[in-house]
Image (tube, rainbow, N blue to C red; front, side, top):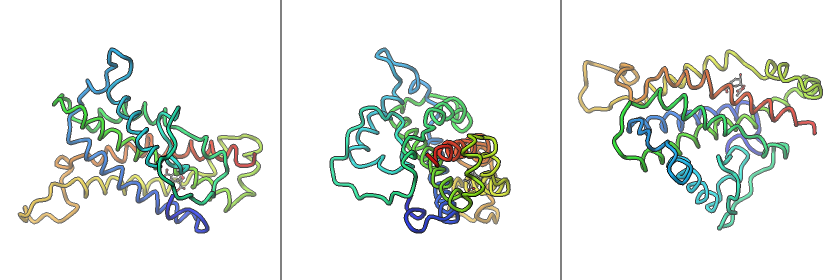
Length: 256
Ligand SMILES: C=C(O[C@@H]1C=C(C(=O)O)C=C[C@H]1O)C(=O)O
């Protein structure tokens, strides 16, 4: 995490980072929506996995060599046998409990993305551009994973702000009580509205004609590159629940 790390770890700074991550997610979905579903990219090939899986595995090897996956929020989808960085990396402040590096919900993100989300925002069809398609999928997966694993910082900051409230349920391993403590329904409602609005603004068709006096942000949803309602649904059903799963998983080990 950039702005939320080190001495400045605060709920406001971490939430600002989550807001910035929304932009990456909305843009990644808009980019993927340029291509139709292209299902052959996801069918298992004779040798085993799909093109999508092959691409993510190989891309992650390159990313690892370049120094990616050193921070707690940058979690690879296939962590086995990733090579070390080839070039020197700059260390990041260690603000989290060491257990943070073991918290990973990427399996759930993978299943959600391919089984539930893709059909919601890509058109039926096959244009044959499979290599481009899986590169765009990789960008979506990475953006989602990073946002969701930022939940580790959210959990740390909430714990530091109120250790007296969090310690008893952590010791009792009471996941329901932890989930209730860390949930802020009013914040979640704002997040859903904001991502929907971002999809409406970022996904407009921009022309030079002053069409029918429309202002920025007025774009009719049917003309948006990704249906704005898909963004609020994505956050409501998957992104925020998975972020909270990360928070709970992290907190359960916070006192170890
Ligand atoms: C991330 C937080 O924790 C929870 C999860 C949220 C989210 O994923 O956006 C929002 C509010 C909380 O219910 C937070 O408090 O900011």
